[in-house]
Length: 119
Image (tube, rainbow, N blue to C red; front, side):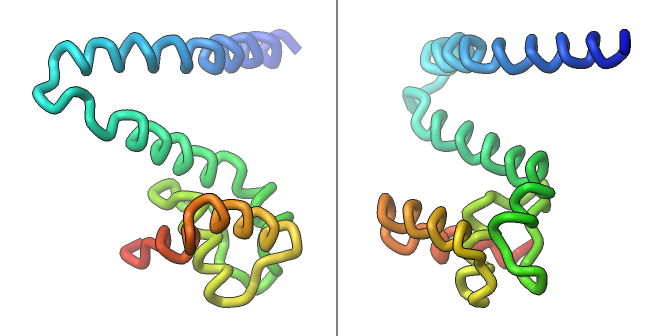
């Protein structure tokens, strides 16, 4: 139980430090970079997306794809890329179709455009 509590405290510290440290780092990037930090937040979002694809793979594989579909969980791939492969292969569950639909509404053909076949 003690190990669980320590692990939980470390998780919470990491989680709560992520946002403020991101903005502190961005301020330093702005100060040091020649391009004004262009693409910083998009790059960070992609990294978080890749983390989410790996970390929540059990949830995504259970809820977003049919049993025969392309598996989520590759640490080098975004959730959108795995969604796109399942969308292309018609192996999304109803929940997966809803999520893909929302992303595709926000950015036309987002999931299909996000497919990374180099993995």
